[in-house]
Image (cartoon, helix red, strand yellow):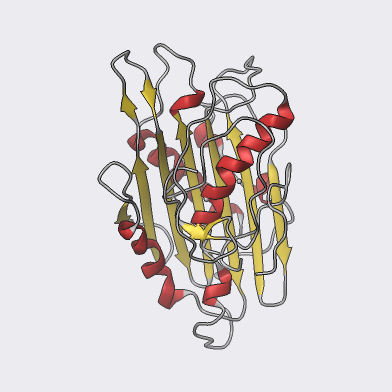
Length: 297
C-alpha cells in the first residue's frame, strides 16, 4: 500500500496482516493518501480487497479519519509476512493519500476533459521513474504492486514499491516505501476540491508530535501541495523510533497525481543507521514526481 493521520481516501479495504504488526502507511503527507481520486490497492500481494465504493486511507470512506502510525517489529520471517506488513503499512498511507475520485465525481462537469496529454498506462510501476531514490535505496523491489483501472469516466493508476538500503538484506521489512497514484478525470473537473482536500491535513493529528504540515509548491502543474509529517524521536539509548512521511500532490488540468515516501525507524539496523530527513526525502519525491509525470504523457 500507517503513520498517524495519513492523507486521502481509497475504496479498497485493507486486509489484516498475518505477521507481526507493521507501521501504518502511505501518507503525504504520510496512503501524505492512498475510490475515484485514488487508485485502489490490489490485495496481497494485492493488499486491498475490492469494496464497492480517492483521495485518502485504504478505508472504505473517501475522507476516512487518518490512522495512527505503529512501529514495525525489528525482524520477521518470510516474504509473505513482509508483504502483508508492507500492505498494512503502505495500504493505509496510500489510501489516506490517494485523491479520491468518488468525491470529485460529484463536482463540476464543464464538458471536455482537460487531460493535458496524459494517458492511461497498463503498469504504472513500469512507467514510473524512481531513480531519485536509488542512491539511498539501491535494492530494487522484486515484487512491486501495480494496478490500473481504465473506465469511461475515470482512469486510476497505482504503484507501490519497497525501498531497501542493503542489497544483501533478507529481513521481511523494508527501510521505506514509495507509492504513486495518477488519476485521469474524464468527466468531472477536480479543480474546486483539490486544494481544500490537501490543505485539510493541517486539521489532522492530535498534537504537535503527529500533525501534518502542508505547503503550496510551485513548478508542478496548475497547483501542488507538499504534505509532511515527522514523528521520529531519539531515545536515551540513542536509537530512533517513529516515522517520517513526505507527499507531493499535483493537479495538472483534470489529471491528479500523488507521490509519497514513508520511512520507518523500526525497520532500521540499530546503531548509526538513521531515517532519512524530510529534506532528503522531499528532494527525492519532487525529482521522482517530475520525471514520472513526464513519462505519463
